[in-house]
Image (cartoon, rainbow, N blue to C red; front, side, top):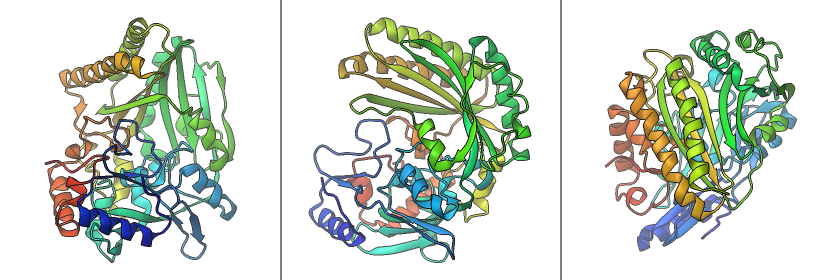
Length: 430
């Protein structure tokens, strides 16, 4: 492992790796879940943990962020200036991979994905040269990095436009299982009308652990409005408890993060469907079925299964066009209306139990896809930041986007260092 402290260090490392044809991996926040996503066993892991500073220019309103930082640190650094970054909704999520993978944030409905707010990337190319990628310089590389992940070079600094204000309203709301249908319908109608209130967002979550099943929503408004009308269908639903309040992004994000103990086995996998009650109903029933199957298959295991629903809409995707475009390829996916992005997040305690439980989670994932296809509701798009190792998310970004990304890779990495020697993350489709 090597831990560069400066862009110059990264340039030297790139030259050495290139010259010696050495396999390598890239690590920023190390939040990706699958084995080999942010470290390499036989080779050199380039860990950006020391390139983690955040500075702010009050004239340009741009935050310059090291890729090795995490969003908790970034929000705290920007809080005194009265601005916020468009970043992760959990403190521990790393900056580099999150941003180049797209980046769904609290502000996504109002300004787009995190990558859409990037004004400039500083990049060390495979030959060790250092370039800026922005609207005026290396614009093709700039666009490619907005969703194309770590396929073109080492990103050493991200200059991101900030949003005014640090206060938001939000929190968890917990419900009895009997309120499921009302909650699902409130979510579906919210997604259908997200363009009416760009400052509000929601996630609906199903959860299982050894204490049983739970049902939650996460409600947020980045204008710090406690009674936003966007949530009018949520408010009347009887709840068990809630943590809704106004606070700074830096204060609220740790709650959304939750405990993150080391030594556990995390497994994330993702899919996309049309916005439809039948999908949510099926996923919930299968969540209960497969959670109990896992418990029976590995008795005594301490594991949990989180399932989240969150919307992707035309209004979200439209922000890309206003900011030079990105490489996510979502335009056709949302052309017929809002979609549900679902996430399975499985956490297991031991490698032995992981070996037993993971195949059941993959079976659950595949069942969702097959059911969605049977109804004609399947959307062939995978969010890279939530994807499991076998999901090949960039291959779902659309034919034109893939052609574009390959052309950029040929221009900036003509010897295919980042396709052949880089062993971490998701590569461009062959």
